[in-house]
Image (cartoon, rainbow, N blue to C red; front, side, top):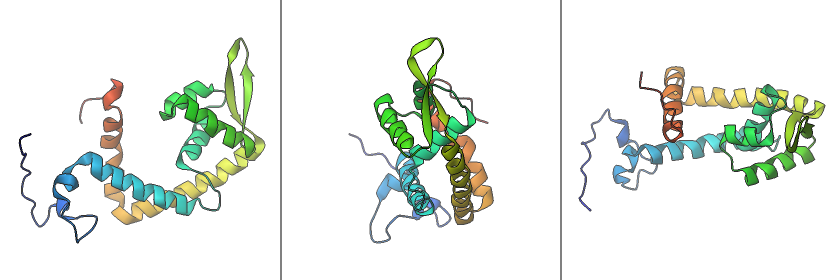
Length: 171
């Protein structure tokens, strides 16, 4: 396999920042997948810290958001929207149901699908979780600055759509 060369890093180049000053990360600091994954790990650690009392995972919170804002969607549609495998999503919904946050209801005219709705307890929990989520986002904004925070969304959303066939053109 031919060796690829990376452009030399300059003093102002963010690729000079590494995750461990004692190690040479080579091209990893210039590989978007690696850096995004490391950022995701840090973001999730912060999320779990903020949500520790609520004992909620990012996937559970995401599901609650979609269900709260789109009541009556089928389990399959919510799983698709969140890119969660159906088998994993069934277990996630079961956990939310056991906690009293979500209920499954029959969809009139569709004997195979179930619609998801927040329970009254789920609506209360969602309200508190939304507040905690905003607290978490505030920490992230403070860590990287509001301008950098705001600029991250559009390119990351475009990247998230790369394999979906709906990648919009660059701005």
